[in-house]
View 1 (cartoon, protein in one colour):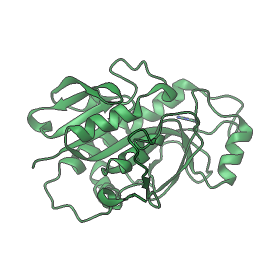
View 2: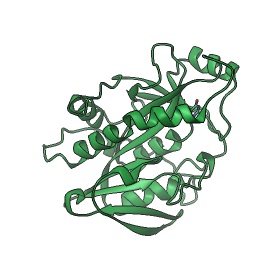
View 3: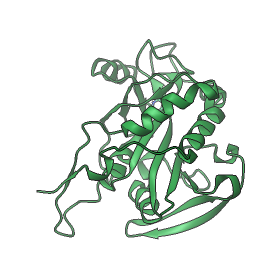
View 4: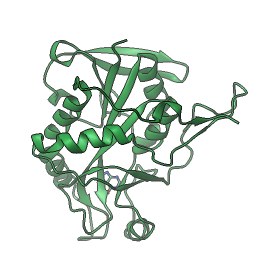
Length: 258
Ligand code: HPA
């Protein structure tokens, strides 16, 4: 079966060249709108994480509907693109990070497909929450798009929508976080629960609060994002549509059922 591949992006899907047709998908968790690629983008789906009109704040995104809709359509591989702030002095704005781990500081978000309602208890193995095969492909493919992603990085997911205090950023750095964002969780673990391969490229658009200066500047964040966004999207598209045979990974068998 010719499976679909998907890019989940915060903004910027209009910058993916080619035609995409919107389709609203109903799922057991609510509905979501996805965009199905045509012609050169055949087999590719784009899902704008914040909704078709960018109206959903991070804590209101229906992550379960998004991942369930992609799984229902037969998607087997997802690349999530996220913008983040840096909490690591060695990871300046402009850096792209090929995420390797996350720490979840969110609270109150519906974050599992297994909440016991169907008498089903299951635990996803997220020792390595991002697909190693997809991560390797992203890393290997990056130079062709003049990108040099940091090959590993720990993403800390804050609840938002407010940004962090300077003390929180210091704390996140001490706990081992390299970057901080608001949307990577539960997106990544839900993909794992659904048995899908998921990797994520994080675009560092600012220093975390208090690292430099006494306020954050939205205009600077936008500029930083524009700097790499198109190349990151093109890399994600090329990796997903590559005809090379995919190596084996364990993402499809990571659900432990007692
Ligand atoms: N904190 C949280 N999320 C973000 C940031 C940040 O500094 N920058 C972009 N997304």
